[in-house]
Length: 349
Ligand SMILES: NC(=O)c1ccc[n+]([C@@H]2O[C@H](COP(=O)([O-])OP(=O)(O)OC[C@H]3O[C@@H](n4cnc5c(N)ncnc54)[C@H](O)[C@@H]3O)[C@@H](O)[C@H]2O)c1
Image (cartoon, rainbow, N blue to C red):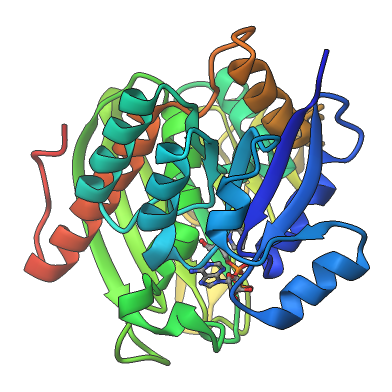
């Protein structure tokens, strides 16, 4: 069977990373790239790939089956549409578009042209997410009532186009969309009941450099999503609370589960603080709790391009669907609306 031949538009940081995610995948082959920056074209050439002189030249190469678009966010729509109109299947980097109206237009073109169109929500294959999803799916902690998902950095917004609003900058569009997508994949069919969002502008006046969102889902699950870029002390990547236990993931890999082993024994030695005494907040005695390691998961991002290739051949359905892409975009818009109007949004469908 012939391999799906891939070209990349935008051979910057992420564009350059894509071929690595195709390694060991005998269904696809990376052929060449186009970038407006001559230095990036030179890089592609020195790596032995074809450097196309223009997007038109790339699109008129009939041997290219799929184009991966990894440019700054503001030109995703225009480039994806141009590629689809040229009959190419398209993988677009996240955020797939700046808003849901743009995305609807892109989806309509993909249907009209009969080509595959999906987005690279690669963080669905991240180990930390899949470990926490397994704990949730396996009901390890009993009824889960709170999940916190956050990423913290301390360098502000990177000093590139991510700083500029007209380029689709800001942390909601950058990291938020990853975390929202993971949240929905974990929550399954549960509907959103309410959303409240606050944006931060600590290091940048133009674009949000972080945010906090509290989402209430059906089944009384509260989901907190947070991105910070002025955090010199990181809080855990994940924190999950169930009626019988808690799970924490301190970073991208390490953490633990603590389960109650004896609910009846609640006695505790009161904690003496500098100006008070508390028994309610005193730690449980060791014999009433048990600590477990996090479960293991077996996931690989290689499955992304495998699925894309098999979907193009008609042997599979695309894993990252148009409905999911639209859901993520509309949720992002609800967050912006909540922050702008400083209110809880309850009409998210
Ligand atoms: N999925 C992920 O984990 C992940 C990680 C990083 C970035 N991204 C996404 O990838 C995209 C690119 O981000 P990046 O960090 O690689 O940025 P970058 O600035 O490193 O690279 C962007 C490249 O696009 C080129 N470019 C700009 N306009 C172009 C045009 N009209 N035609 C062709 N090339 C053009 C630039 O010259 C540059 O080389 C963004 O959408 C970003 O959100 C995704």
